[in-house]
Structure formats: structure tokens, C-alpha cells
Image 1 (tube, rainbow, N blue to C red):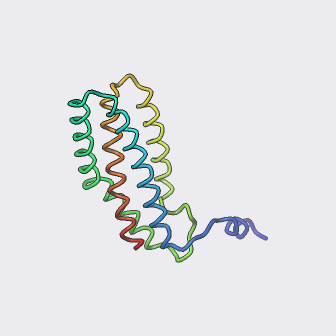
Image 2 (cartoon, rainbow, N blue to C red):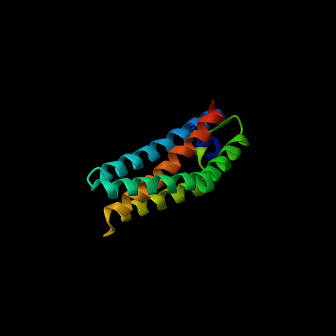
Image 3 (tube, one colour):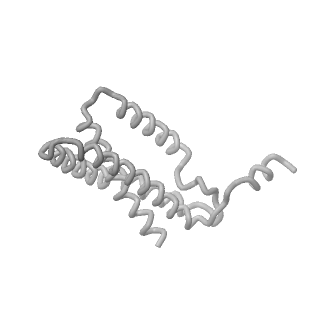
Length: 144
């Protein structure tokens, strides 16, 4: 048996259509987690500041969705559409995107442990979480 066929037999293959659902679940899951963290931080702040931070984060998130993350999601959707019917479960993102995800996780960790005021961090988390959650709907639309 050559190494190519043994590697292929260990690949968790699914129908290409399921990749849109997996991508949507991952994007919305991370987006919701970031939004929950941000809201929990805003809840411990004075109300005028927390409301302005939340509105700012949400507004930025909608803009990031419209002009950034929706473009990435649509690019992923188009890439998935070109895949064969059976494809690796982890192919819902391009391999380069996994590097970007790692970088974003490190940046999130660095932000949480930075001396920046929690208001700024919460606003950034809400913006990114909102953009991810909104963009996940594009994957669900394709899956359905």
C-alpha cells in the first residue's frame, strides 16, 4: 500500500454540502463567544460608557461584515463549490486561513492580557464577533 492511499483512507471525508454547515457553525460559534465575552465586560461598566462602546462595536462589526468578512465568506463558499463531492471535513477553510485563525487567536490572547482598557477590548471583541456571526448566515444560506 502506498502512502497516498493510506493517507486518503484516514481523511475524514464528508459531502461537500456539509462544509457550508460546518463553516457556518464555526463562524457563528466563535462570533457568539466573542459577543458574550464583550457583553459580560460591558455589563461591569458604567451604563453610558458601556452603551456607547456596545453601539460602536456593533456598528464597526456591521461594517466589517459588509466590507470584509462577507467577502471572505463568499470566497470560501465559491471555493467549496469547486470541490469534489467528497472532501476532507477540514476543507471548509483554505489551509492559509488556518494560519490566520492562529494569528487571530494569539492577538485575542494578547489583547486580553494587554494594559488596554477593557472598554476598548470589549468594543473590538463585539465588532469581530458581530462580523463573524453575521457572515455565518451566508454559509447557512448556501447549505439550505
